[in-house]
Length: 107
Image 1 (cartoon, one colour):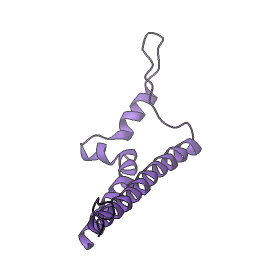
Image 2 (cartoon, rainbow, N blue to C red):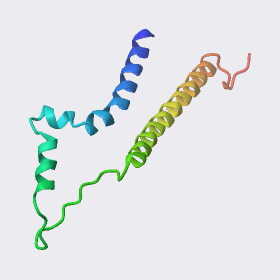
Image 3 (cartoon, rainbow, N blue to C red):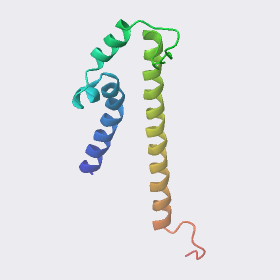
C-alpha cells in the first residue's frame, strides 16, 4: 500500500513540475543551447520589410502567465479527483461482487 502512495506522489510531483521545468529553459540548457543568447540575437537584429516576422508564443504579461499555470493545475487536480472517484466506485463494485449482492440465487 505504501508503494502505491509513493508512486502516486511521484506522478503528482512530476505532473506539477514539468511545466515549470519546460518554461525555465532547463531542457534547453541540458541540450547545450543558451536560450538567452538566441533571444538577445533576435532582439539586436534589425527587422526589415522583406524578412518574415517570427511569432514567439508567450503570455503578454505576468497575469496571463499565471492564468496559464492556474489552468494547468486546475486541469490536473480535476483529473486526479475524477480518477480517485473512479477508484472508489470500482472498490465498491468489487465489494458488492464479493458479497454476491446482485446474484440471481438468494439464500
